[in-house]
Image (cartoon, rainbow, N blue to C red):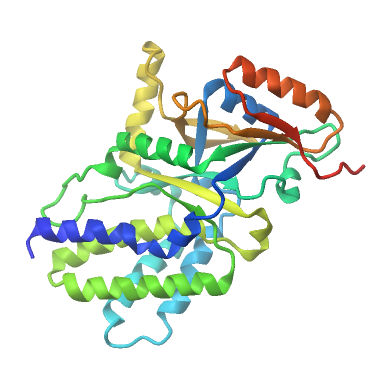
Length: 343
């Protein structure tokens, strides 16, 4: 098999690698993004959703738990047919479990970064409201978002992320050829379901490896693709203690090299206000968190409704939010949470 044919087969296989999650895409036609008063105002006025860098998620052990479970599966029932690919996957997993030097990670131009936009399938979730209603004077909001509208925007946006849709060749056979598409789906909490998905992935990887990876360059290239694919998939596995959040995630991927270019673009933006940077930082509890900005100004139907948490001033909030939406050319429904306020 020549290089072009192998890459073609691999680029068809890797997106299908996560097909175990396809059923999780289905269900509700809308999802709900919970946010603060300041977050709501920024989303409505700027018409942007911010995808936060997954390296700075609240639960730092979240992705490590994925690789620990993968290791458990890889070290069980290893037969001769799958031994080689299991060793490859173990190496990938152990590398991700090891402690890395953050400075080196930031300087590695080829390192992939993953940016997450979190929603919920639940329109009135007490656990999520509690993040914003620490006392009776605090208010939280959620925005109802149509899945097809947001999916359309994301897939349009990712065409501008060069590493996602272009193949760049830095070496003759291996390094530099990547395909990373956006991914969205339900977060998986239940342990048996996680194990079932990972077992299917190991078997599919083994089938591809035994059928297509005959030469060393093919093995190296496929290993690199697996590393990125597993990193992306790890963002959809969470501890079952968070199951009540019913989270639904959207993930974008790019490399440090492109993020550096986005940062340079920010400097140009200051001189050319008509060109807006996609990459930036926002302060969260005093920490500058990187984000990628996805604009939806072309989609007037992006917001179907806004729900306001239970609160002391929620009646006033309804009127205020209606004015905010109308001024910015949105006409969704605005209503209060059905969860009663407790003092």
